[in-house]
Length: 335
Image (cartoon, rainbow, N blue to C red; front, side, top):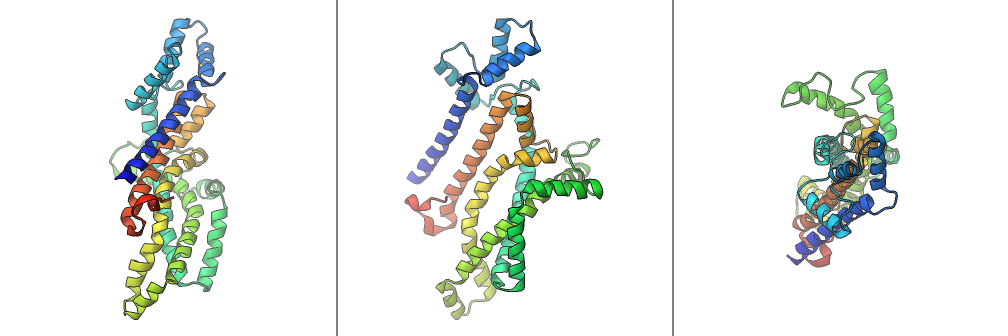
């Protein structure tokens, strides 16, 4: 129980620290976002009165510049607890609605890509370990190292050039075709999958090699353990040994990496969605930077941070449940 409370407190403290940093970036930095927002509003409406300008800034940032700093900080925290992230300068909509509209699409392509990388990687890595030293193992190891060294955005550009434009097999941008009605219908589902294939494909092609190499290394280490020789001497089948002993123990270190990767992939979506013009959270963040839409920028940063913290938090709490050897005290640290 003490361990759970300790990890929970650490996660809450991390989120609070990011929220405080976000508040500082908005309010305290000289010539920072607050001043830029004031200048932008005056440029858009030169005749705006000082009172109207202040009211507009308060509405957009959920901060009152003329109040004491501790009052502003308290109001900012209270607004966040109520889901109030301010209002988009460019779209004139609540930031929470803007992010809520884009986040599911980012979650869709990033979790699909991560799931495929994980499944293909562990399957291939386990097979490579059982064929250690063979031509198949040597070839796939080389291919895995090569693919892992290539950035996903390079593969993405190649897929756009050939699969998208030259062969015209798949769409190169958007999340579904124009004219398709969003909802639970087959046309919308198929269109969404087609539009997500190239972004997901670029992630899988450059990512599964790393998972396979990790699984191969873990499996080879487990295969050399003495207790597997004892299991064979007891007459256990190779299938039972592979699944119950080798596969389970080799997967444990990768379980933590998988959960942490879920959070970090939100950050990786920025470049991916911009390349494929995929309207998710990362592309909205890029657009908000270009348009100096600071409330959206700060909301997106905060959401990405919370995703990372939650991923690490779940990995920490559940690692001891799937691996009894790591139970109790500081030994349950999963990263």
